[in-house]
Length: 615
Image 1 (cartoon, one colour):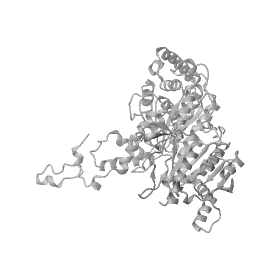
Image 2: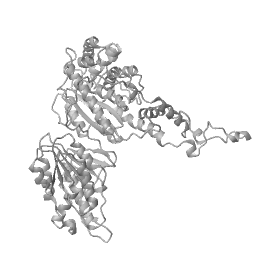
Image 3: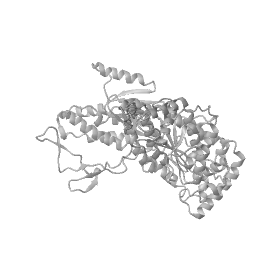
Image 4: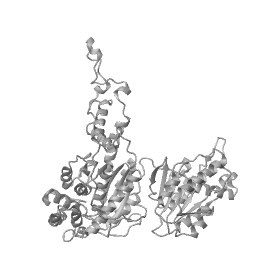
């Protein structure tokens, strides 16, 4: 198996959109082998209609091969991208071949499944496999139905083990499923935990009750449901790099719709609560409605976090508590789902993507599609980037924003990962606000006093170099920024061009936002500050952009973590305008409405539930 092949398993129910999603994952390949496991001719008119629809959706890049020997078909051309559609029909053929529909638990398909997995592992080109998810498929409650369902679950689990990516499609919406952090544990009847790979699956036996029962002596897999699974980060599929020409030139920014904002404020006045009792949450909902151009707004259901990663030459000067090689290690950790942002995103249902812009190491192709270079240069003594590299990074950030908005993302979060990145960020803040270095330097990852002094000196030197280009945002990014920061600038500004709201994170992202607002004046109207970090430069940057943070939790991690924690508040603010009842709908008397009973001297008759609680 080579590092270049990306194996993806796409699961979903009937008519969920799983096949269309699978085809989209291979959309940028020029040649694709379509391995059809179902019959291409049949007397079943409905089936043939489905085949026709699928065929019309595929263009002339596809070569269709009808086969039930997937192992052989994959091995025949391991260097050509393949789409397998689908594993459910393949499994049916395997059961047919061994007359397994009446065999019950005695059927053994380990050989064909092993052969398929081995062939997948040998692929040197991308491959996507479509399969029905056992829990979402309509299966009759018959012995044959239970055989198919049990084997389908086993097949999907085995294939998932050799795939780098597993997506679940429900009602056209795509959820990237995190990889298992390690071997699954099973709980035996004695209470001891053992690796699942050392145990057998439960077997079905006949009982006096309807349906199969589990043999008590067999180990049963249990799952800890006390917390949601972290979300593993995914990259971007291969494709042509964006054209960097004039990447720093943005169309005029249209602000959020003020007329809709007024409509949202008027709607808040009709909801079953005292006016203004939800404080700033009400104004956040108003902002979301204005961004979407509709009141009530649509619920925010597809948020995406993009973590821009890069190394910085200045980090070699001892400005961080951690060595530069930690950047690549943390990128791998985020990609695997092990970082704080993954855990937090798993809780709130956000997708996480990580982009290697300038990590000083080789990373997986899906992470490094937009990579500009390995590490930026030392801003103390030379430009961090060339102007051409700065444009290339800006173009990448813009392309990433476009890609996500086009795919249905309704809210964006920018995060970052890079040892030493608070140093260039602080240089940008200091240069744009004309502050002295000692006013704005923080501890970053937790440097000691000696490290703080080295960092202050580095920021002083960087600000001295930045003064020459303070009125040229592109030159400023090249002089003292970095590819990760430049990409973030393009991402934030393009989000505003595309009228998509963004939650900003800490000092690094907010520093990039300052430059983005210079390139695209008015872009800041499309952003909200997720939190205020303990970095002194962050508060200065927030004031410069006239942004008030949602949270203040003394955080300084980065990764997008503070913004992800603010996400549920932003989502709830929109939901209130969507789902909360009005006084009229709930039959609750509005305090502002005239009270007919007061004419008879009853001054308490107008009291309402809303009056009873004003905090």
